[in-house]
Length: 296
Image 1 (spheres, rainbow, N blue to C red):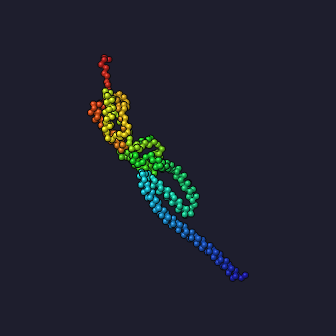
Image 2: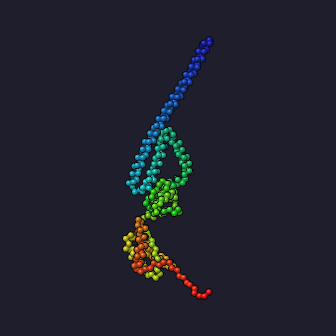
Image 3: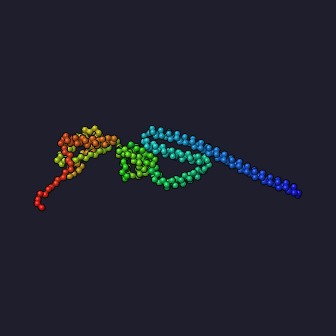
């Protein structure tokens, strides 16, 4: 073999190797480009689907809210349901988009499970409040507009709003009290205005010189004449206690829940005027002082 022939063979081998490398590179770059184009197309489609899904979620929330507003559900509960539906629909949307992007459903569930456990440990109080809000929504121990007393924390007022995590109360002096739903669902809550009428009890003292039968008759006639008294309910007049300076007379009767305080103020004023007109004395505390005049 001549040197020229050998050089020619080497050149041919080098050319063949370069051709193979170039072909492999072209295949790699072509595949990479196709993969990028495919992924890019999917990303664009996912973004488009996300905005479409967001629009559909808003439409569903609007329909649900209109349906709830036509029912007898309170406004605070409507807000709670709306927020819950929003969270659930967005979780569903993200899961569907992840599945379209090629992520397996089992992987999504595993990730959500791990994330849920981590979040649950980190936000135990918030989750407890959320669960408490769900219980309040389902059992309806109170609704916005009810006057409630929360035992143990000394909070009371009119329910202004029931949120996902907190219930807001408005006091009689126009202060706002925010109570966690976890507390509201795990303690005794007295719903003062649950029924249409409330029993009002009034105690008034009279002198020991007073005729008890006359006092009872006067108080009975007074109750029969009061317009704010619910007359088809039971009325009671009784001796409540024998104090050191007075005989305490008790009155129990029903009034409308919306007129509770005005009825109490009015009946006290009317009792004083009626007693004055009938010569019945309302005594005040007295003290007898005995002086020893003897010599020391």
